[in-house]
Image (cartoon, rainbow over all chains, first blue to last red; front, side):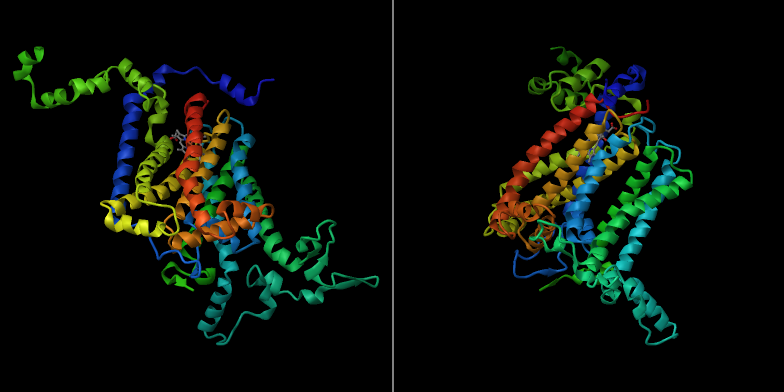
Length: 299
Length: 251
Ligand code: HEM
């Protein structure tokens, strides 16, 4: 059997000579000009802005905040919202594998070689990007407890209740960790037939054999697992599915290419938002701050 | 020579032109004059060691700037520029904890155009990452990853990772607070991997924390290891663009 890739090559139409132009001068000229423009622009930039050089490295003086290079700040941002193993390693690995796998999954030829080749490509791109940017921003605001601060300030500011503070009953909704610290897990044990279930949610014995070296698998801290792993992962898996179902319902999705367009655009939105937030909106202790309030302390 | 008889009729521009392009030395390098017939133009591309990365003809739609925005080519151009400025930086920089920071300071203050050189290298590195990302987006949105180009897309993803690694390894070299702590944060993330996390971190740093061993490892990877690997992948990438029948276009 001939592979699909090989078949695709063989079914290409013969080259139509009339539709072709010569690389010299047509392409070489464009390449030359674009290289020239970039050289000049970078020269000018380099003449005006110096590359940063701070004090000599000192392992005993930690800057606060300490940040990775900007292109990894998307991952450092994820780190604030989930278990480090997910944020720093598993999520990026899966993302790269999925990225590389796109062409093996979306194989039909339509929409190839032209910008936004399918009927609803434009809408899917704009929707995917915008919706993902907004949802990501909202999630970051929520996990940064900004909604708590804003609500308190608004209610106090309006004079409705001058010493209003976020109700204890809603502690679980302060931020992601609220699901851990804001719920009275201690009182949630129950008894079935005289047998106490989940007496201690913070140490559910899993007793998976052979795992004695890994306390995590021996005794599951459920509240922490819920807030640091289950909810973040469910969000990252669930939101794309919701996006796809939503656009399907709108009748925008007909091919795998459409799904790829939607998810890729959403990915770009998340990538950009987390990079920007991580770069410009994280101050001391990685607290959310507007860029102009960020100072780096050395401690 | 017949030049002498016609000399009075020649304009000044022609004279200069002949002086530059029709002398013995020039013609020993470039055997023919400016290629102004289609045949010679194709030969110019096919026989020049740099230009022969290209085919001699290409489809009309692909020379429109709005098809590629030259992003792949510019990524490559950044790589070339980084190689040139990088080699120059190596003249002044010694990758030891004692000297690294001093060398950068000296480069900035004592070396003519040293600061400019360092700035160029730094800003081109950032530009390359942005250009590679934009190139990936243009390939995606033009649906240019579809068969038969699946594998070249994968090669592209590897190029993207290598670009990030090149930049990351270079980040440590100035040995200032920014460098030291950025690499500390970055490698701590590596260390949090569920399997082989600590081992990979140790391998990368040559120790448990950023120190002299990390500096020499990052330096070696940055100036020779990764550039070699990325060059190989780029060669495959460009070769595959040609083998896959040039740039993608509608069937
Ligand atoms: C160091 C990084 C890279 C360099 C120097 C590079 C260079 C190039 C060049 C010069 C082209 C010719 C067309 C153009 O300029 O757009 C090209 C095409 C291509 N690149 Fe890249 N590239 C890089 C990274 C990537 C990445 C990250 C991807 C995708 C994940 C990718 C996927 C492709 C594909 C599929 C083509 C064929 C496009 C078509 O047929 O229209 N490349 N690349």
